[in-house]
Image (tube, rainbow, N blue to C red):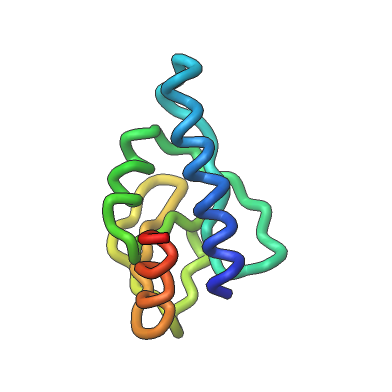
Length: 99
């Protein structure tokens, strides 16, 4: 699960990094849920995504993609949910963010 989340986050980080340089302020990001088969797309601004990335344990997921065993909902927005990883999943997220 952590590997899937980390991959989604790395892809989204590249999207976030590239968009401002291309003159774009909002776009689509991929769902950072634990589901290996998820290809969901989230519409949020660069600022909204940056807000989430400011917290190493926070991820953006589609509604209904919250995995209650390892994460808690911290914010609900139209079209996406912000979750916070707990326990080992949270420690893994923090370690990955610092890499």
